[in-house]
Amino acid sequence: MAKKLGNNYRLYIQSATPGTYNVIAGQQDLSYDRKSNQIDTSDKNNAPYGTSAAGLFDISVKLDGIADLPDANGFTRAETLFKAQTAEKFQIRKTPFGNSDQIFECVCNMVEFSINYGQNDVVKYSLGLAPDSAPTVDALS
Amino acid sequence: MTDFQAGLDKALYDRLTSQIGDVQTFSHVPQDKSRPLIAIASVTGEAAGGKSAGLDRVIVSVQCETHGPTRRPVTLLKSRIRAALENWTPAITLDVEISSPVYLGEDTFRLEDDDIYFGIVRFLVFLQPG
Image (cartoon, rainbow over all chains, first blue to last red; front, side, top):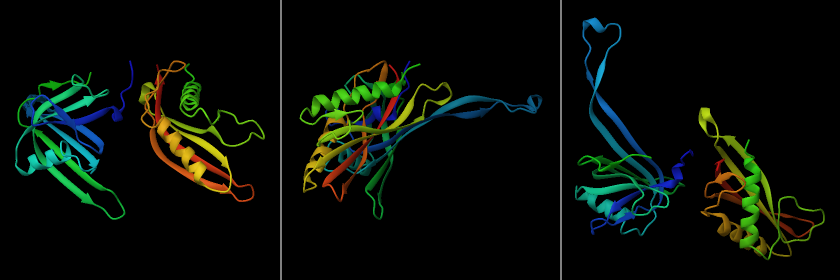
């Protein structure tokens, strides 16, 4: 067993050539949120505890980073696709970041692409992804 | 019980010695040792492994010292230390798994009377049993 370290994971975006991916430069925090909507299955006999069944999964990916440009194949490709409201395939890869190191792969829509120009600070970006279809790879181990 | 710091010290010593062969590296600097030199200085750690422990988050400072009329030799030596350690992938050493060092920052200062310049370069690593 070994405890996993966050620095060993990066977000990649598929290039115009399907099956090839490029890392988005300047990455800091990367998170993958997974939760299931709850379906209330309680009736009067369940009191005092409500019961639930798992509904549809609600997943999202969030990446915060420092703009490190030029990055035509990473940041700028994502920015262009965001403005075109076009979905693309993304991967989260673990070290050593080879073509078979993905732990998450999914066609996603970019639903957030914020940039912060803070005083006395670096230019930061925040990228949010939501699935366009079910992930094809989705397991940390 | 794994001695995390012993593994880290040895890995750093071996790496610095192999990458910066013309400047001697010490874990403990002998008295009156002439400059330039590199020393593995302070190591500050904290538990990061949760309830099952087994993971430490450690900030290690590597110190360098030069003697002379200008600051340039110590800034050069700091940059060489950074190049040697930043994003290097250490092998498991004395049963300790060491993450790639992340550069955190550095300091440079001078002892007024002796023309001795000090540099300190700080790195973050995670340690766990290998």
